[in-house]
Amino acid sequence: MRHSLPAAALASALAIASAPASAQSAQAQEIAELKAQIAALAAKVQELETRTDAQSDINIATRENLDRMATTQPVVDTRGGIKVTSADKTFEASLGGRIHFDAYAFDRDQADTTGTTEFRRARLTLQGKAYGWDYKLEQDFAAGSNLDGLRDAYIARSALGGKFTVGHFKPYRSMEELTSSNDLLMMERPFASATGLFGGRQFQQGVGYLRAGANYTAGFSAFNLRGASGARNEGAGYAGRVTFAPINTADSTLHFGGWISQENANKGSADLVASVNYAGRRGPSQTIATVSGASGDEVTAYGVEAAGAFGPLFFQGEYANAAFGQPVGPDQDVSTWYLQGSWHLNGGHKPYKAGTGVFGSAPVAGAGLWELTARYDSIENRDVADLDVTSWLLGVNYYVNPALRFMFNYTRGDNGFNGDETGQYALRTQFAF
Image 1 (cartoon, rainbow, N blue to C red):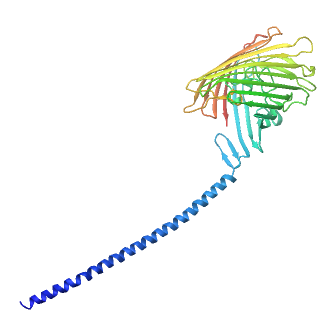
Image 2 (cartoon, one colour):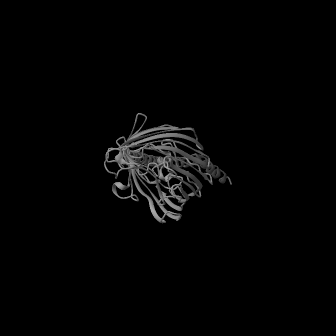
Image 3 (spheres, rainbow, N blue to C red):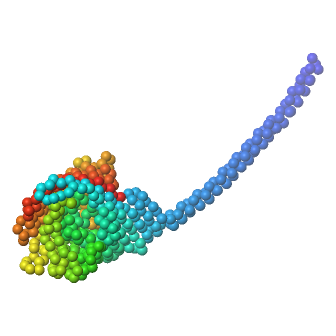
């Protein structure tokens, strides 16, 4: 027992003495492990930094490539047509077109008429700009080949607060005449246009200037009495039109305008004729007045116009008077007027094109747009007994989408000169892009 106590005491003393050494060893091991973990973490951070720098270099290179493409590659837009614009916006070209396919049936009276189908219009249009000039070239294949079907063909440039135009285009006269055929309320224009008063003289070769603001336009054109496919001649004319819209908001527009036109026949001029199809296109026609091209006489005309769009309601009317010179006796006085309107059944509204002083078609959304239409049209030669023609039209338009439209018109014509009363049922499928 005596020996056991000293041994136990010695063992305890040795254990106490060795404890700090063991603790120090464990702590050193933990520190070594922490250092290893820190070193591994540092290596990971270094690797991530290297990857980030590399990705940044890639991002910078990608951005530089995109910027280079934006400044050197053309931009192609296919919404509604095909449009290509150079990166510096100096050059631009767009391709569009329209197809108007019609079907007619007649309620015959005296005139011998034939129901039919036809392409009223089949056009391709190329337009754009180059070196600061605008250009437009349009061919209507339904009207013939080469020059027979040439419509707008001009160059134009902005200057002096407006735009100068040189080439083949419509003179600045008659509101409905200047309205695009894609936006017409009825299938055919009224008599106070190239569909009547200016028969066969829709496009003329010349120069023009048009200035427009938010609520006004002022245009003047001087031209040769030659269409693209007409014979060379020395006839000349001029036309001017001014418009003003005292009200022009997003949902309400009130428009007033006036125009004047003079056409002077000369060597080689074709006859200047006012002639109308009073029961729709391909229906019976009536000549109202004529100036012989060989006579050297003139046609002087003026017109006033008013129109408005208020919510779903729209109205438009014109009155025009023209004096047709005669080689013997006084001039023949021709007057014509029309009033037309429409009502959009499901919320449409006709927008105002302030740049040209005409109205466009209502934007289409959702399930399409329905429009009821009506027009009364009249033309009269006051110097020839009973030489007056009237027609009234009822119609409905269905806009399927911004490109596709269906039109139905019923036209009832009344020829006071010969007593004919012919009716026409007409249907159009219209696609424009």
